Structure formats: C-alpha cells, structure tokens
Image (cartoon, rainbow, N blue to C red; front, side):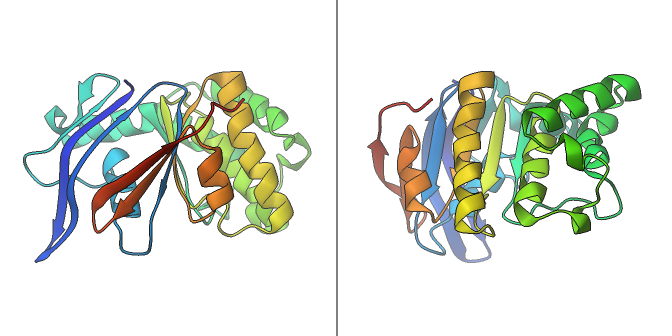
Length: 227
C-alpha cells in the first residue's frame, strides 16, 4: 500500500472531528472522499497529506515510512518529495509565470535549475499549456490556472496527489476536462489520487468512493477501474 492509516482521530478543543479512521490506498488507485460539510473530509485529507498531525495513538505510513517518526524538517522534505497537492483555488504565486510556478517544488528541493526547467516545460507541454508558459496567473483562465496547479503537483513525481475540491471553482467545460485529466494521468503516469469532492460524477468515477459521516467511514462504494 502507498498509504496506510490506522486509528486516525482528530480533536479540536472538545470537538472530535475524526473518530477512528482506518484506510489503505494502493498505488495507481483513485479514491474519492465524500460527505456533508463538517463530516471531516478536509481534516482527513490534511492528515494524509502530513499538513496536520492526527491525535496521539494513530499511525500513518506513506510509502512504508511512518510519518510520526520524522522530525519537522524531515517531514517537510518528505512532503515536498512524496506528495503533490491540488486545491480548489489554484494557489499559484501571482508574481511568477506558469513555468516558474511549476518549477517551485523542485527548486525548494535544491535541484539544478536547468534540470528543473526542462521537467516543468515537459509537464506544461503534456497538459497543453506550453503556449502559456510565460504568462502569469492573472493572464490565464481559471481552467488554465488549475492545470498549471496540476503540473506543479506533478513536478517532483510524487507517490500521491491529494486534491481538495479540485474542480470546485471551474465551469462545467473546464471541470470535465480536469476530471478527464486526472484519469489520463493515472493511465499514463501511474499516478495515485486521493480526492475530496462534492461532485458526485467525479466521486463515482473513482475506483472507490469513501463516504464520511460524523467523523467516521459510513460506506465504501467500488467501481470498475478507469483508464
């Protein structure tokens, strides 16, 4: 398994948001997480992405590494190397071009700029964005910005991409293109995705749709693998 989570709890003050989540995610799998507001979806995604710790007593392994055993600095390096993130709003840096935004995770790792630029250019070409490589976010459409965010998430060849409402801010055409792109990337690159979404069409295309209710897994619906 690429992700193994056991007995994941999360409490904020007196509010227990997650109440004991057990979850395994296999390489190349696309898993969607659904549920009403307040069910704990984003909190779970943040824990799986090492952006937030679970309460004591839980265990999270990613690629066989127990995350809790890492120092804060090691965890940050691990996260940058092993995980990619896509958010509802693209979170691109407005002062940088599309190419520079995509390069950022690799530059943080200290990789050589020439190598990084070549990799970023390859990703933009794959996502049909090369003509926009010199444009800043304010000069691109919402759909283009979100595809740049996908390229950025892929930059360090992560084990897993975690996406929080990735198409939530897009119109119906760009939404469908982004959904298709996710499955194309799994087919072509063997990419694993964990996606929090309110979009049931996307959720049901996933290999597994995991429903959360009141901080617990209330159901798992499997579908035939796509792409």
